[in-house]
Structures are given as C-alpha cells and as structure tokens.
Amino acid sequence: MISVDADVIIVGSGAGGGTVARTLAPLARDGLRVLLFEQGPRLDDHEFTGREIEMADALYEDGGGFLTADGTMTLAFGRAYGGSTVVYTGTSLVAPERVIRAWDVPGLTHDDIARRSQVVMEENGVHLLEDADLNENNRLFVTGCARTGLHAEQFPLNLRGCVGSSLCNLGCPNLAKQGTHRVQLPAAERQGVEVVTRAEVLRVEERAVVVRVREKRDGEKGRPSEWRAGEYRVGAGTIVLCGGSIGSSALLLRSGFRDRLPALGQGFTCHPAHILVAEHDHPITNDVGHPKSYFLDRSAEEGYVLETCMYFPFVTAKNLTGFGESHARLMRAFPRLQMILVLAIDHASDGNRIAVDRHGRPVVHYKLARGTIASLVRATRTSARIFFAAGALRVHAPSARPPLLEREDASRIDELVTERHFLPGTISVSAAHLMGGCAMGRDTRDSVTDSWGRVHGIPWLRVADSSLFPDALQINPYVTVMALADRVAEGVREEAGSLVAAARG
Amino acid sequence: MVPDAAALDETAWRDVDTAIAQVLAKRPRAARRQLALLVRILDTLPLFRWGRRFHELGAARRARFLDAMQYSPIPLVRRGVWGLRTLVFLGYYARPDVQTTLGYRANSRGWALRR
Image (cartoon, rainbow over the protein chains, first blue to last red):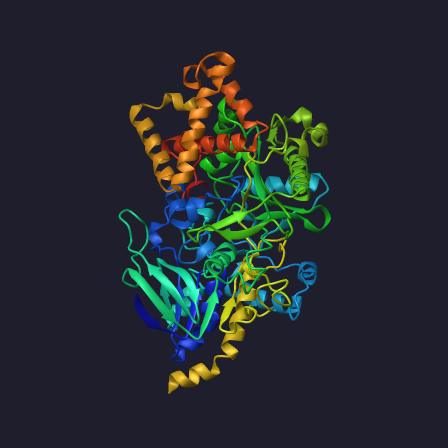
C-alpha cells in the first residue's frame, strides 16, 4: 500500500464535497495539502450525450437503479465528478424555517442556513426562467393548479445559458446547469485543491483513509484517474465525509464506528416519489425546455409536494404500472403526455436505516409507513384533478386499479384512487432526496455529529452532506446541503490556523 | 409485455438481449440466481391452471397470468414481476429507434430545433 500525507481529506464531490472544497480552497492556496476523493469519473464536456442508458450508466450508482433491501424502491444518486449535482434539475430552494426549528439541533439556526443559502444561490446564478422558456408541460401544470384553486410556484434554477435540452437528469449537454462540477470544484482546483477521481474510500482509520484508485475500463466514459491505480493509505489532520446519505453512513459503518456511534445509519428519509402521467388530445412541448419549472408545496398541510417533470422513455415505461397493450398505448402517446412527480414527506423512524452487508456495501432498509402511503395517495388525487383541469383525456394513477382514469371518472377520483390499491412492489416508487444516517444532534444517544458536522468524540472527523439531516427537509435539498457544508468547512478553516502555520514552516 | 416488440427483427432482438444481459452482469450473483429461479417458477405456475407452461401459452393467457402475478398477494412475486418487466422495458424502450418511433425528440440543441 502506498502512503500519502495530506492536511485535509474530503470524501465526495457533490453538493457537500464541492462546497467544502470551495470553502477550504484558501487553505490550499496557503500551502496546506487538501485532497478530494471522488469514486466516480470526471467526464469531458463532449461526453454528455443525453442518451438515456449510456448517461445513466456513466453518472449514477447502479445506473440509477439502486434498490432498497426489500426491492420495493429505487434510489437515484450520482457517482461522478460533481456527484448528484451533475444529474439534478437545479431546483434551488431555501430550507423552510418550520423544518429547521422542528429539527431542534442545538446551535443550528434557520438564519444561518438562510444566509449561507443566499450566498450559494448567488454563486450558482440562481434565477427564474423567462416566460418564453417555459414548455407546455409546465404551463399546463400552472393552468391545472389555478383551475383547481391551487397556487403553483416557480422553481428558482441554477442555470447559465440553458437552451432547453430537457436532459438535466442525464447531465446537461450544454454545461448550463451550475453543479459543483461547473462552479465550486473548478474554482477549488484552481486554488490548489487536488481532486482524485475513480478513487473509492474503502475505510476510515485513525486520522487516515484507505483509498482504492481504479483503472478506467475499456469503453467507459471519463478521464483516467489523476493517480495511478492501486491502494493508498492517506493520512490527514482532518477528514470531511461528503459521500451523501448512503455513502458517508456506509463508509463509517464498514470502518467500525457503529460501536461508538449507535445512531449511525439511523433516521434515513428520502421523499418517496412516483411519476404520474396524463394524456392530452394534442401534442405538447414536453421533451424540450427545462423539465421542472414549477411546484406545488403541500408539505405542511397534506404531507406532499408536486413537481413538474419529464422523464425519458425507459424511465417512463418503468414507472407506468402494468404492461401489454394498455401500457404500450400510453407509451405511443408520448408526445401528448403531461407528467407530474409526486413526493411524499416521510419522517425519520427506527426501521428505516442504512446498513452494510458482509462486503461493506451499503444496504438501505426502508419500509413505506402508512402515513407516507396516505400522502402519496392524497398527492395522486390532487394531481389527477390538476391533470383533468388542464384538459387531459385520461390519467395514469398507479394507486387506482385499473390505473387509467378517464375524463368521466374525474368526479370519482377519491373513490378510485385509494390506499387499498397502493401495492408496494407493483407500483414503481423511487427517491432522489436521500437524507439522514449521520444526523446532527446533541450527543451519541440521538445523533452522530453536532451542528458543525463534528463527529461526537472524534475531533478530526467531520460530515458535510445530506446525511446530517435529522429528518426530511420537505423540499429539494441541494441548497441546504451546500449551506451546511459551508458551515462545516468554516469550522474546519477556523481550526486550521495552526496547520497553516506549520505548513508555512 | 411489449406488443410492439413483435416488429423487431432478429438483429434487434439480439440487441435487446445484449442490453438486458449487460445490466444483469452488473448485479450481484445472488440477485441473478433469484431472477433465474423466478423465471422458472413463472414458467411452471401456469401448468396448474391451464396444463401448459407459460412459454406454451397464447398471448391472451400470458397477459392474464402476468396481470395476476403483478397484483399477487405475495410481495416477493410482485417485486419479481416488477423487476422482470423493468428489464424488458429497458431492452425495448431504451433503444434509440424505438424512442424516435414514439415521438420522443429531446435533443441537446433544445428549443433551437423546435421553434
């Protein structure tokens, strides 16, 4: 094993890792060695082709099909230079004050998160799309909401030069989305932060990590690693974990920290979601333009959020229930389809947790609570009303049996869409807002870290990603992840004065 | 599962098989074994109702059987059928020619091609 010395190690390059790298970059400029390890590859700009399977394989863990232990839910998270920020839609919201208050983390205030969020949003060029850039899939949602007495809100988006490819979830082919791969990581590298891709951190040891750097395989996208393939033991004064909810939790679990941190891996939440589809009698612009421009926030009142969305043919086919002619007929109507993503607000519970198998690979145990299913069903009913109010001919509602609701069924939505028909295993449920596992809190009895991401009892180890969330955030999380990561990094930077002095000799 | 797949020629079917095989190759061996077992069970079960294996049934009976299985009271069976159909849909609907036929036109040039 090759030995390497550094001052600060960052594990992961997504919203958390990218922000930590940016905030700690001045340390690198001042002479400290700051290393960032990313498990996935670094893609060149021309490699973002927008082709469904090719890009999913290149950018997502398990091609986007990571399954929970019981196989009833798919979890999507990125694995590339930039992490999940390469594949999200850029929706940029500040954490609700009521949620942060309910988290009740000593020392953490909403004001602090909001202030840091504003900085991040400015840095990422967050703004509202011009009216002319909205497609009909989004406009119909706004119309349907208005006709049902609901108020759709426009998503602030972190885009620069968006031309409306609609391919956000496959990595923007036009470099428009301002993920960490476009903003924070290049800035950090310019100041001296060293990024090593294709580098999987196998375990955390006392002030060190063991990393396996792998070769680029034939036919794989991305550049070769910056380091020669092999196993390395890298020592550092400070280690900051930013591998995401699943990655950071699994890394600490397979490194044997569970005995010291009984809350490790607990409290996993993910905003379980599914895609609803409605057919109109005429083609609409749905596969052009930004796909997710509006949302309806009913999280506080009814436990769900609706978001506009547009998915690719295979993902759409997978998310429709059934098969055969009825399924194929809806697929053939693709140019006439309107889509809504429904997200349920779930809550941290004892059973929903991250574990590792005997090989140290992550295993996510997740059971949909009755309350979560009820939220998904309520969300489906509201969506069906919105679809019909917008003029749809028929609506595909997975929690109805049969799942197709015709226009004449519009008055019977509550009767047809029911929890009784919500069959886990039959209905496609997926999640991309993965949260918890290394929660912030008071002490080891209820959490893994304090409000500065310092792991309880281990002063050289920090966490700075969505695993810090003690409960669901109830909105799209990336801005809050970046705000928290900035806070964690600030703590590291303040304590790094002695390291800088030593480095300067 | 996909009626339109009947129009695929031999080469296209080979591509479908290859796409599915590539996905399966990345799954743990235990998961592949479970899937193989499920396929055998699904092929055998119709014997008890119709006296024929699944692959010997006509299209209508196949559809009825799979429909019953996807709503099975046994969660393991439902999940297995969901996994199978996901693989089939991946093999078919991820094909660029199929996506074009469906009318899916997403392109990196976005609005420039549509206005």
